[in-house]
Length: 394
Image (cartoon, rainbow, N blue to C red):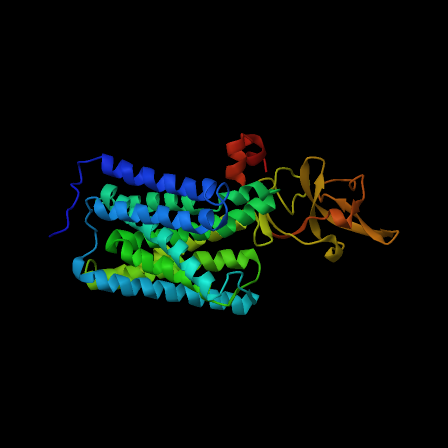
């Protein structure tokens, strides 16, 4: 008996059923099973039963056709294994750079079996849903569908329970860097695999990563910035590799032109991620638009200064430092240093000002040092704020 396929323009209740079942399963798994129903039943048994029922539902409803060529399905599965290998190599490299730590997972036979059942059932159900919904709605709009679907599953799979513990902007930035950007990159790759080859390549990729994380006795350590960077770059690199392999095998476009497009595409993606992190200050460097002329002619209104986050212990006479002044942050030059009761204090002055600042600056209040000035690129920001006179008079 052949596979029964769903007509692309009929039976809207099937998509509603799949989408509703998926969301309901996530809500039950995160809000009820475990938090409300604890113990072995709530944490392990009932989740496995719930995800297994969703798998059965997805296997019994009419199927949708996948977009990739049938003769290349096996190639896509090998491609998914290559993606897993790239992810593992990225983790090993991260460990060599930042050090390794002991895995927090249970490596006893019982622990491995329980994790295999709970994570495996959830993984299979999620990837069946992803593939079904993606190929049902976005068969003719691939990249729009891949982007929307990847964003949806990124938000769905994020550890939202950690939001309650976020106390400041730094903690929020760390949460976004660790959870959102790597999650989005991994989901774009997973969704691309599901679009071309259905749920199996997607299961191989995500399952391989989960298996490595749960079975390896050691995992990479280091700071969260390094982890976020490696976990974001690895899926993007793997995506380029899989696209290259698939499209060359499918002979869709010329190889030389394909390579140029891939290099341009991944360069844009990586640059976008790095710019976002740079603007958030995660690399200890951050840009600031200059709003006043107190440092002219060295720094003019509309210039952008790059501030390196350093403590005042390294500051010396002649350095331009950033420090808080009321509700503002000021960048002035250190013109004198004095010591009182074992603590250094700086006298600061704007180059354009006739007199130094009235208050001494404790070295503990120094928030950073200006290491670069980029002329005029902040004028757009000033124009958007309505500061036309400031821009055109300097």
